[in-house]
Length: 206
Image (cartoon, rainbow, N blue to C red; front, side, top):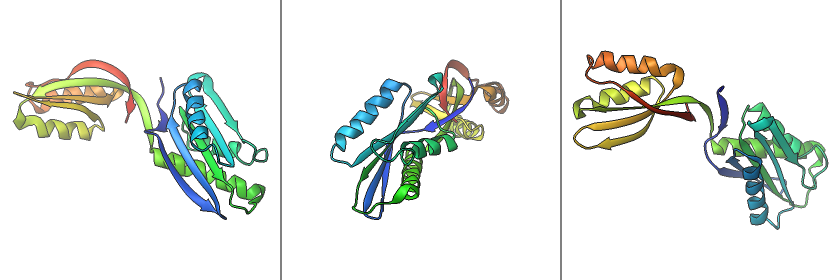
């Protein structure tokens, strides 16, 4: 499966435009059910808001959905969706909540405001790249621990877990096409004393 971009975690941010308060919420989601649950959660939280606009994009069946939630057609949900698509992000849902401040923004103003709301929400959620990764494990002496840590970092891999006992057991996640090279490098720098064992695979951030 190819690499893809998503957000790392649920987050929110806000700004004020001509006394209207715009709050952007984002959450990583895998299914329509998760997206709808998130949308309903925000609608329930902001039941008194003027609008709760949303858009989501899913890898599954390449699904894209949006809602203007009462704003003029094309001025709210579509701009939120456009920003998601422009950022190349998927498996994500953005809800843009608006509390009307008394001043009409006009169609262009609404498009800009909802686009900005989507952008600050995605930025707050921290856009990351996900790829097929191998989960590798090795146990080394304490004296070698720092060298392995540095090696993992050099390969852009992530330390998933570290256990300290008689030795140090390190679990790392590395992009699958780099796993063999990483393993060979560990054998090389340790003169064959240490080696990684593959214990699984999963999509992980790189």
